[in-house]
Image 1 (cartoon, rainbow, N blue to C red):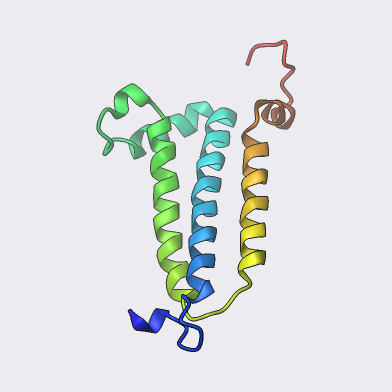
Image 2: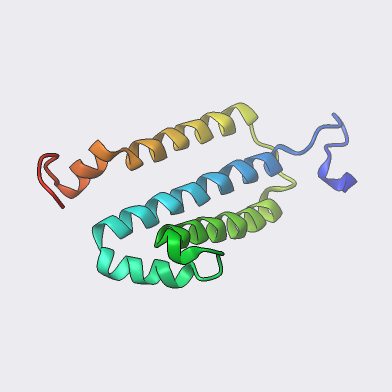
Length: 129
C-alpha cells in the first residue's frame, strides 16, 4: 500500500485519481450509449438489455433499464481495473484531470437531454415516435 504514495510529498499518485475519474466517465458514457441504442433500435437493443439484466433483483419490473445499468457497471469496473494498473505510478495534473472530467460530464448530460436526442434522431417534438 505504501507504494501508491509519492514518497517525496506523501501524497497519493495522481494517476490513481485520473484512472478513477476516467473510469467513472466511461461507465456513465456507456450507460448513455446503451440508452441511445435502445431508443434508436428498440427491437434489437431491448432484447439484449433484458438478457443482461436478469441478475438484478426485480429486473422484470425495471425493464431494459436494468440492462443499461449492467452495461454501465461492467464498463466502469473493467475500465477502472485496467486504468488503475496502467496509471497508478504516473503523475498527471489534477487540475486538467478534473476539468476534463467536468467537461465530459457536461457532454454526457447534453447527449441525454431530450431536445438533443430529438435532433439526433430527427424527431419533431410535436410528432410521436
